[in-house]
Length: 297
Image (cartoon, rainbow, N blue to C red; front, top):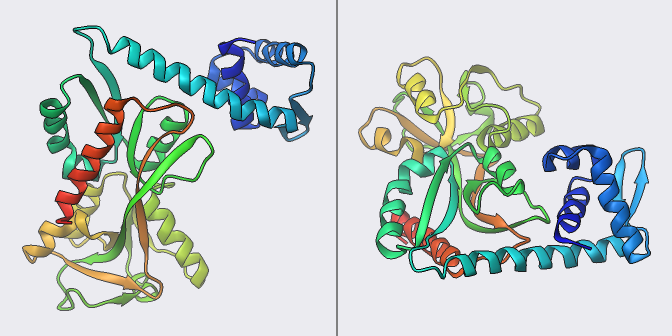
């Protein structure tokens, strides 16, 4: 039994599919199958049930999966801590944030980390929340601050706050007045791309009401959506914070959507199967503090 075999086995269990696991590990499928068979021969027990839909762990496989996660996490944590002992060494930490959060707290956080955690070599990555979650699963990021991070065995997550969504329009004399979702969906909307958390929240709620969403523009960028609303080309349903300055200046109206209330949750997330270093734990706390300052809590 070796670390490479354990990493491969963990990936197979998490994907439930040999072909997908081989692709994510950049291995040929026969080579991956050989690693799993070697593990089974070494341990003298079947680790996977193979069926037409893929694979799933046997009882012994589930035990090995849990132990392998702990072993690999300990190894990675040890590697990082030992490497950081070198006098001139820094600890690279890859932090992913959604575009709106980069604008709100990204610069402040980067400066604070440089001043208070000088051994941390912080890399900031900006992506939509669903992309960040996928990259976290592939272990391409160490910490993620994103919306709607799904529950997953390979992800540790902490809910930090809920954000209500609002109907954003040009001023109509009803600023701040609640609006039902059915009324909001009478507008032609500019909304984010598919799989975006805001879009998925709106689409699910509309489906529950049996109402078709009138999509005028599908746009990845929140600033671009805001610009379309300012031009009077469409309305939108967005988090209030993304248009707060325009609402304060009277350029836009933001009305809370009710019946039902639409809400998204902000998560701090990390790979569950490895132990965080002291520097990473300190970074997580800096993130929490930055968000508390932003909201005035």
